[in-house]
Amino acid sequence: MQGETQVLKFKDGTAMGRSEGAFNGRAVSDPKQLRILELRCGMIRAQALTPRESLAFIEQLLGET
Image 1: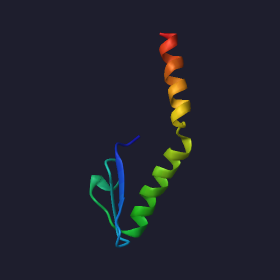
Image 2: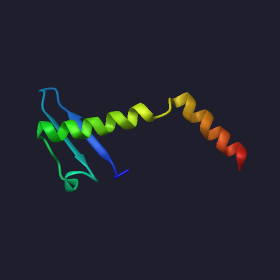
Image 3: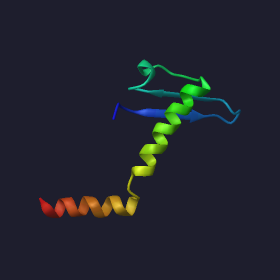
Image 4: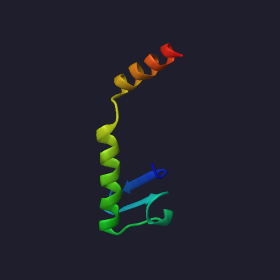
């Protein structure tokens, strides 16, 4: 993890993003740089548990303490 990542897409089709760990934390609008941020978000999303699985995991951990 390299900090928070944000990608904002606007109604007019433009987009802007930033990441604390990429591009020195500065805002970017270059399509190649935005694609990098979108791919990073997608990889994290693909590995994340569903809300139900997250709850079960947390409850399991709490039961072990």
